[in-house]
Amino acid sequence: MAALPNLLDTTRAYAIRVLAGLDDRPVAGPPTSTSRDPLPVDGVGTAGALKVFERRWDPGFSGSAGPRYLGFVTGGATPAALVGDWLTSTFDQNPTSALDSSAPDLERETVSWLGELFGLGPAHTGTFVTGATMSNTVGLAIGREWLGEQSGVSVSRQGVGALGEITVLSGSPHSSIAKAVSMLGIGRDQLRTVATRPGREAVDPAALAGELAALQGRPAIVVANAGTVNTVDFDDLRAILELRERYPFWLHVDAAFGGFAALSPAHAALLDGLAEADSVCVDLHKWLNVPYDSAVQFTRRQDLQVTVFQNSAAYLGRPTDNPDFVHLTPENSRRLRALAAWFALTAYGVTGHREIVTRNIEAAQRLGRRLSELPGVRLLAPVRLNVVCFAVSTDVNEVVRAVARTGETFITPTVYDGTPALRVAFSNWRTMPADEDRVFAALKSVLT
Ligand SMILES: Cc1ncc(COP(=O)(O)O)c(C=O)c1O
Image (cartoon, rainbow, N blue to C red; front, side, top):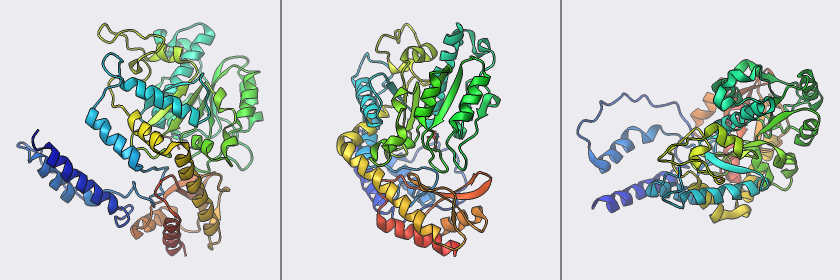
């Protein structure tokens, strides 16, 4: 214990060096081949462990926290979020139950702020989960319980078999939706892909209406997409909501990063109708720039959520009108993920986060324009938000490797509408126009 202040000081100094060195660290690189050490029998102490880590593992870690890591959809950690995350471990709260700490109330406050940020109303309650995959899974689990309610069975008691055939409809679902329906016993084959609008990833409302009509009154789950991963396309939520007047379905919206369009005055209308969704997924380790892992899950039917996830036990208590988090997600004990988000929102407010989001969108738009002028480059969609999706005349995987070898930036491959493509996704708070220039120069050097 006496050594702790010095250890924390040493670690602080090291963390500062790491963060200050982000600009020089190769943004990505093939993992350095590291042979496994034997299990330490007598430990080397914390200072010793830090030295071993710095020597053996630090050099191979990517610069994913930095401004030019543009693969997948990857946020960084703002200073306030990092501080909140450190304190999460320092306080080491378990927000499972409200018997011993006000930590669960901090989570409730944070969730309500986030709901407001994304334009949701008081009808939506929420909880923290590890990521968008888990948020989608929880939303669909509640939807599955709702299907049971429609036909007078309880899935949580009788099992998913009591439902008979289940249909999940979506235009361009993220792969995590297929994973969720697999985990939930619904089955990947029941996820039916609905036709999209011509040349778009947004669902065609007429095609969706046709699929719903074919169910002849049988309730379904519709997964709407608010920001697809390839071209950041948005389903027309208002058109889908109109269908809900005629057909019974649970509307889940995957707004993993598209939810942050709410912060950009020029794009907020893309989310019109979100407040009427039955469940909503938003990732926070993407565009809120809090460290992994963090996402939020919202629903209008917390009662059904409790039915699915309740974990009543003599020592934990039963769910009340204000249920403890232990009754709301697959996890029981867990860390207080809300603290990093609370710090970020408290430190920068809506205005600060709007600045990050709009700066990232402008960066994507500028880079899209510059890339489209390069010979052999073809944008596969307009830059709708923060992602540039483009085809090249050479092998995309080779381009990804060559770009990574520059050490300057990192982008990821995909396939869009059958065409091998590349994605450049901006969601890091550190990315400035000078970084865009470096990214463009690196891409140009590989592509021309
Ligand atoms: C639209 C969408 N949904 C879900 C996910 C899954 O997110 P996570 O990896 O945080 O679980 C992603 C990740 O990129 C996404 O873009």
